[in-house]
Image 1 (cartoon, rainbow, N blue to C red):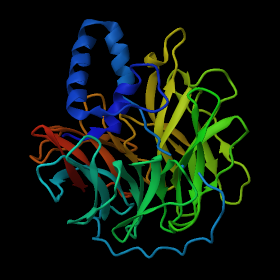
Image 2: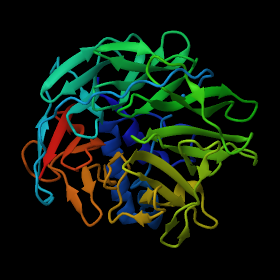
Image 3: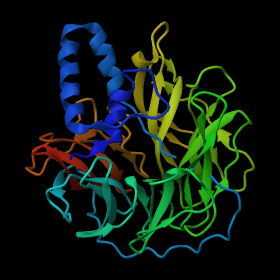
Image 4: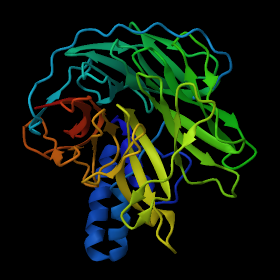
Length: 417
């Protein structure tokens, strides 16, 4: 089978009313659908409006708990290959990563800030059957994790990775991978782990039953280590929901929150910041985008003080599917807000405030604060293959993701100078 991909689902998600969580979409089907919609755009203005929304979306993924354990000791980062030095030229090359089985679809789903470690998965014998993969430079290691839809979202400089799996019983559950062994994260029945810093602190979300639609809500959580129990992060009020999506080396946590006291299941998402020592999160104002203030903001990644994400502005008298979306970066240290110069999904961000993802063409693209770079396929030609990006090193010179070649997804690393 081919790998089903959340990020492509995000591209198509806003064409319908926004669900609680995006469906999974096969990339080959998504490519054909995107092409069909681009043809429709030439015929009808309504198609143009829809594809304008198609250009940007974001999937925040977020976990539960109660007791706090002692803080984990700081991890000792391993030495990595030095990155190229000098000014960034935007010249990149793509290399398909080594995999255990070349007949199966593979993808990169995350990476560490230096670009040494990449995490991903390989499709198995049946739908939703995935084997976890961890790359240390050119060495790949396969990780056993019973269950369905296993995925790793993040890895720190010591190679400690976090993610989730759909367990045989009990639904979605958080996992960490330590020294090549998958271990359950404690204090939570259902949820996922989304990010980890070099000190080993982990953030994510848990599910909580609700009397309101859609009957299950999210609560942000933090683990002090992969051996600790999850602790709930405070929310702005009793009617709020949310998830944590990133944590920096200083312990600042970011995520998204929504006030569910209003009727209806789909309330505007807001950026929340849990600063060390604070008893409550800081809910930031919605960013300004062309034409006014955004109606909702979905954070996608957090590094170096920068949150990169997708801001959407609803149009008067139009459904949510007609909203205009923009790639936005917000610096939670300075309050700086910028709309980036190219419309891409927020597949990954870095400590320089750069963003990597795909536009509606599904061609992997890197967006710096000044320009955009169309990433090449293995043949060296820019834009020669469809795909997506899921990791971006802090210096912008190592990216990880997937390219769609010969009717199958291939895990790829781009190196740039």
